[in-house]
Image 1 (cartoon, rainbow, N blue to C red):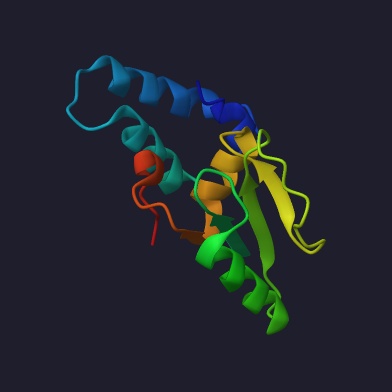
Image 2: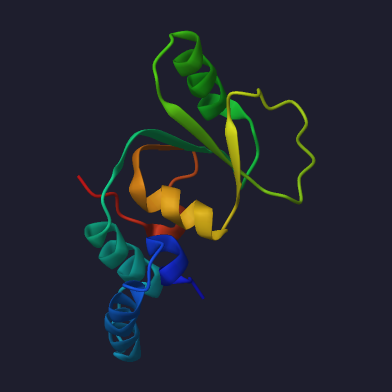
Length: 131
């Protein structure tokens, strides 16, 4: 279960959690996780200049890898965050990249609050990005 208080960083998550719990009790046809992420993403502010990268279930590879390297090379002042699966032994990640664990509370925080999300796995978790 997602700990909303940890994502929000306050006790204000209790009210939000109650709303989500009531919605989940109703047998809606929409995927439960999609409901949760929609509600939370609408309530939380976007963290400016933050780019979240993810590739194939927590690997450091493919197009997102080269996009993040080019973004750093061009000198843009973005906080580059990579979603990494702890079960995969990845040793070649550059030092300017902040690593977060797949499906951790930090993962949900940055998935819902990053200004840009770059992911090469379509349909991940059914989240909907806020405009």
